[in-house]
Length: 469
Image (cartoon, rainbow, N blue to C red; front, side, top):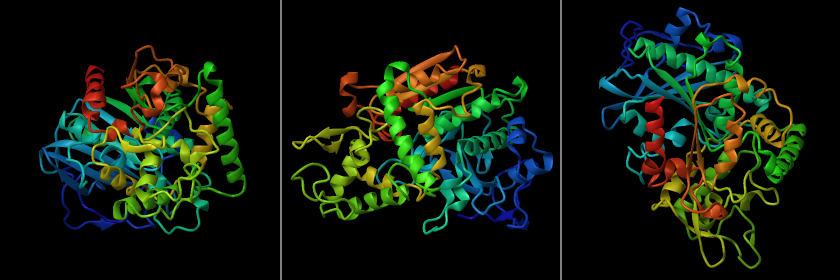
């Protein structure tokens, strides 16, 4: 990833196109760093905004008159204190974004950054380019923005992760605030000063969204940046009747806390370097689907099952996530990324809502190598019912809310978290094809973005809500 490239796009007119000349941005001259308070309050001076806007030099044309822009933004003094802001938008001409009255800013969850999470079909060998939420919304006239959190850009082969020690949910919320400010400023410069900006967070990205809104609620209304919130398939607090699931969260919190106390600053519930594990699962399944997996021991999926094949590992990992967490419990009963149909062994043998399973293998290979552990620990603490600094002011948040759940993911369990907000305009949309009792086989956490029918089942209702708000 190129962080230090030529700055060359004129602020006047802001074509966001090609380059001629300009000054190189060096490590000695990083992008100005805004404090949490300054980022939330929009205290970014004109020179900083101009500097930010001129860094949109990576433009990727997409089918249907769209373009995808990337912009690395320095948010701290450390080598890895960099996020990437994305924009997917219709253009009137190459390098000239069309005006749009509606915008959505997207925050990814664990494992996958903005592009594989929300643009998975772009460049895919197994899906048409327009079968992604970000592309779908942009084609419908929504100005789509998003962010790669800091850990997405940490390169494979990194050995020392001490720089992650201070990265928390609050850090990521601060970075989202800075990204939102960039989006508002650049939208104004490209003719879309008016209009709404909705914040969409998927999975742990929704937890980051709650944390951001908790801090934004302290600002005067005129300085707040978010006009609507779309938490996608996430639980930050369990309802009182879900005491068992809360206890599961406490168990996971205990395991992760011990790992953190032992000095780990990277990783998650799947251990260190979870993204590298996912990459290996996808690569092995794509290259040698029937070969015995070198990743898991014999009988891991039950007595007498032997060494699973690479394909088997990929399918079960996606469609029966809890099998990889044992003896720990998943966040909700039967939780899974993608729904699967059971074979004679009682384990998933095929994917239900994705016809080309090679799309799964490709998706796994696009995961980020590493992730900081602190936000995982803090989210489990939150779900466990412990005191965290991210929900003290949520009742002051009164923006319209759309909760999107997957019946086989967090699903109905995530509705209670929305009640922590002060919002009265609340819509709940659960992608469901079976009764709740069959949730282990129903629409999965990532089916919301990857399923063959996600456009009809999930994206169109989401678009209708955005247009109505």
